[in-house]
Amino acid sequence: MIYEAALLLREGKTTPTELTAEILRKIEKHDKDLGGYITIADNAMEEAKKAEENKKDSLLWGIPIAIKDNICTKNLLTTAASKMLENFVPPYDATVTAKLKEAGAVIIGKTNMDEFGMGATTENSAFKKTYNPVNYEYIPGGSSGGSCAVVKKGLALGAIGTDTGGSIRQPAAFCGIYGLKPTYSLVSRYGLVAFASGLDTIGPVGSSVKDLAIMLDTIAGYDPMDATSAKKEKECYFENLKENMKGLKIGVPEEFFQNMDEDIKNAVFKGIRECKDMGAEIEECSMPSLKYAVSSYYIISSSEASSNLARYDGVRFGKRAEGAENVEQLYRKTRSENFGDEVKRRILLGTYALSKGSYDLYYLKAKAARAAIKKDFDALFEKYDVLLTPVSAKRVWKLGDKLHLTEEYKKDICTVAVNLAGLPAISIPCGEDKNNMPVGMQFIGNRFAEQTLLNAAFSFEEGGEANGI
Amino acid sequence: MEKLASLAKLDIDNESNLIKDIEDVIKMAGELKDVDCELSDEDAVIELRCDSIKESFEREQMLENAPCKDEGYIIVPTLWEEAE
Image 1 (cartoon, rainbow over the protein chains, first blue to last red):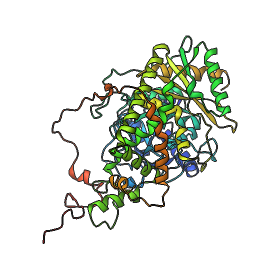
Image 2 (cartoon, each protein chain N blue to C red; image 1 turned 90 degrees about the horizontal axis):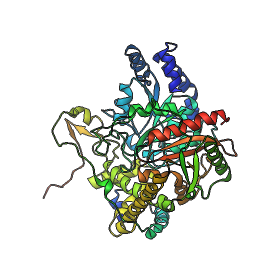
Image 3 (cartoon, chains in turn yellow, purple; image 1 turned 180 degrees about the horizontal axis):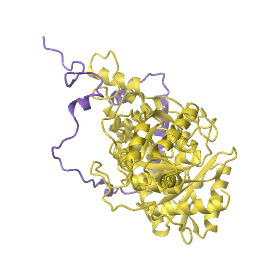
């Protein structure tokens, strides 16, 4: 939709203000029921007017874009869906936000999410629930559930999400749209509300592969404000988008296909057959270390979260509890009253994993598992251009449906290994489950192989359309 | 659990499911004991910015998000009682 709208803008068939007004009308009409946004930018029309007077070459010029609410937007509320940051108005833009504005995009609002990115349903937001736009009885996935829901419903032409353990790819799959988790360090995290700094990535969600490429072109690149940012020559993902399926070597690691719902397996296998029909060379392969991915992920991400979230102490910014008589009480009361249960759970787990006596047993072992996962991926990428897997082994579930906690965590098996290895991966729609809800499959690439991934996804999108997907 | 809660600066209700949840996840993570892989330090290289003084934000602007402030300072509860 970004690409198509950009063409209309260039041909003068619409204007940034018309486009923004239309999106705002749709938000007004639908978001009450959808719950995709936490905040609507009240200066969106003003920004659209400014864009109109200052035409840019970028394909994002005049395009209304939504941003997940854990990415700082100057003078616009940024809550990370936490009571702790209920009133936090950043005095600066995240690098990603600044780049979007520089390209002439219109920031339309901030999308709902699981608190601090911790969750897979968007039900952990302190403020509201977001519903799956395909069927409101279902969750949209998470944690970037708001970003994916608003794009699917047409309440933004594209959106930015974040992915620490699958938070872009899984909701994109559940909402039936496209989502890209870039290589760790490709997109600056300056101005991102940190969850797990060694895993956090920022990436685009959109209704086509072209839209992802257009957004990635704008947000990728070196940033001295992020010490982990990669010094790399800028690529032109959109310009170089082309079909590459013929002769593409695709590995299909069997471990990703265990304990799957049968209808999901069928949809993904159908996708694999489509790739084969388009000329890809498909081969089954193995990734033995995948069995450690969920445990390793939850230990490492929670450890990093316990340290990162120590900053919320009621002193410098964020909420402060009333009635504390000393500093210790101030810290404990503030944190206990303003963090949700899932956030507390992860902080406690991380604190435990890093504490004396547990560090060797859990944290170092989790790091060793991470090294094993990286090693396995490296070996696979010596043989294959990309790997093809499900995004979720389980079909999307209804709001309120809950399993035992560790079973919930295990649902992340298909996405977390990618974050542990710092690799890029793209989630693309490949069919429907037995409830007529969307199913996604995932291409995983080697570090900085975004172009290969986008091209593979583009081939599938084009070929898939021809085949009626 | 009280030790853990104290380290994490949280108050945990004994009735809460949180304790059981943490125990379950730790039990699950017990599978990591079988991992046999050398740790590599390849991801430890981070290039830091030059530690130089430059303009960033105005004091007042930064204090706008402070929950309790007075004349350019953040107010906190008393840290030390005055000696008798």
